[in-house]
Image (cartoon, rainbow, N blue to C red; front, side):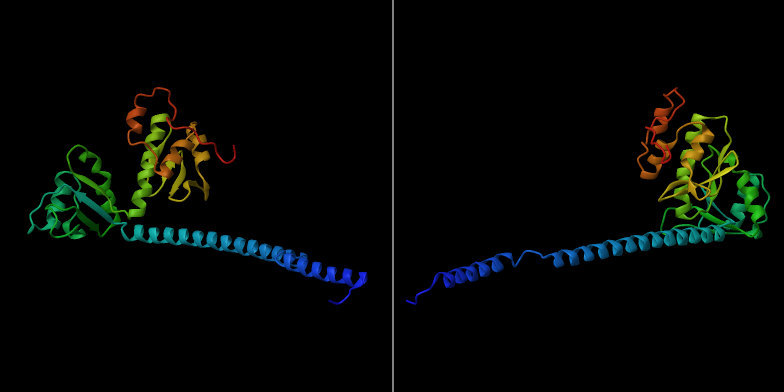
Length: 268
C-alpha cells in the first residue's frame, strides 16, 4: 500500500469532501436561479394582469352587444301586443275576432285591416292560444294598450310583446316598484317598457350589476329619493334570494322599513 504524507492525505480528504458537498448541494438553487425565478414570477403576474384586463374588456363588449340586440328586438316588436284569454275556433277570422274584441270590450275602434294576427305556440297545443297582434300604426297599438286596465278581473290579458331579456329585467323593476310603493306611497313611481321612473329619474336593471342610474350604481340614488335603505332588497333581487312570501310578510310589518337586512353601499 502506497505511503501518503500528511499534506497528500489532507488534499485527498478535501477532494472527497468537496465531491460530497457538490453532490449534496446540486439540487439547491443558486442566487442566479432565484433571480431567474423572480423574473418569471414577475412576467407571470404581468401576463395575468393583461389577461384580466382583456376578460373585463370582453365582458364589457358582450354586455354592450347584448344591450344592442335587446334594443333591436324591442324596436322590431314595438307595434306588437299579445292577447290572452280570447276564445276562437280554428277556422275563425282572427282579424275580425280581435277587431270585435277591441270594439266591444276595450271600446277602441281599430279597423281589422290595420293589424295582423298570428296564434302563438305549436299547432298541436291547447286551443285558444295567445294571439300576437302586429299593428301597422303605433298610435293604434297605444290606444288599445291604454284601455287594457278595464280588463282587470275579466280573465282577458293584453300586454306588450317584449324580448325575454327585457321581461326578466322588467319583472325585477316591477317588484322594486311594489316595494317602493309599500315604503313610500307619496313618491311618484312607475315602470315603463324597460326602466323604472322615480321622480323623473330613470333607473335600468342589469343582470350583472343590479340597479343602474346614469351609467353607474343606482341603489344609493334610489334610496335617497325614497328615503329608505333599499340596498338589501335590491341585493336580494340581483341574487334571486327574495323570499316568495316577502310581500305577504310585509303586509304584517307596520314599521315602514324593508324586511331585508341593509347592505351598506360602497361609499358608506
